[in-house]
Length: 386
Image 1 (tube, rainbow, N blue to C red):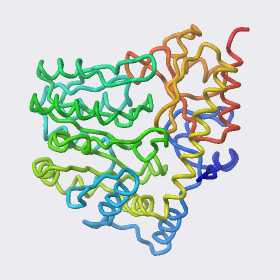
Image 2 (image 1 turned 180 degrees about the horizontal axis):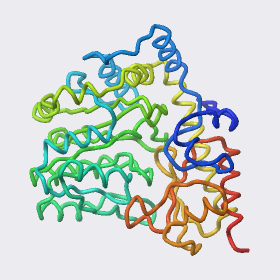
Image 3 (image 1 turned 90 degrees about the vertical axis):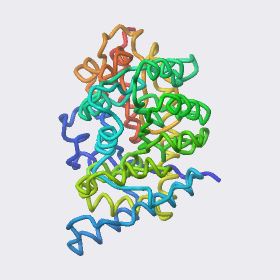
């Protein structure tokens, strides 16, 4: 059954927002950098937040705001995954959850594998937890990206104690296969190591791929793994501060249960209220419409780059609204986003922030109106020598 794509809000309305995407740069800049989208919230979220404001419901978050059960039901509906709400705790955001778990499963100075190029805060949250980043880059197969399982095995054999996984992967949009996740779990199990899976983009896996939660990949994955996730990326709720730490084994559940209560107190009440509404069946139709819009844009971007920026290399992502684009052949230096912002007045995310593999790359946020995406790529194309 066809789904009508969600329409983005007009630019004059978006520019009234006070978030980073719309306030960091002056109005002549088209902002396609930070991971905020340009759509109106799901109606169920708007209703829930409006009711809370009308009631003055702005106090402390209760011990059980209902989001653990809401997420468990969402995971069953959308992923076919069984989550025990008793094995879910909340905190402020995904990176905070990652740091707190890392502090419990590593010792100061332990090495933690990250699969670069990867979300820039990974490089900061590992040392915040007292550990050391060990880069094991994704393998470029020519058709996509995969985990370098042999490289991760080597790092584990040499003493690395954990893997910080991005599933689906930011910035490449890769939805890792069940087979590779199960193999990763076996490697971790052999070496007594842990896998922490950031699954914040999971609701945005497109229909031509299937999302496999790490904890579902195999019995070993359930034993060695922790998932940290949130409604914030799919439903554009980053400012409301609510994330979930999910486990599937008694021992890992005990680790999360043993975290100080203060970590849970950091959950934003509006984040929990909005998350319950986001994960409810009422928001499924909105999410399907969003996915239809993003599916159109991820394909449109391929056509636009082919027409206006020949030499750009881009693979249509499996998930999300972020595109990883290689501009090396254009000769615009290690950080082409700087020139693009200065000369084309389009703000993109800086490729080198994602790791050494990001030199010559940019990340483009296509969670916007097709007309805005078209204008942005046409501006970038104006810099290409005839």
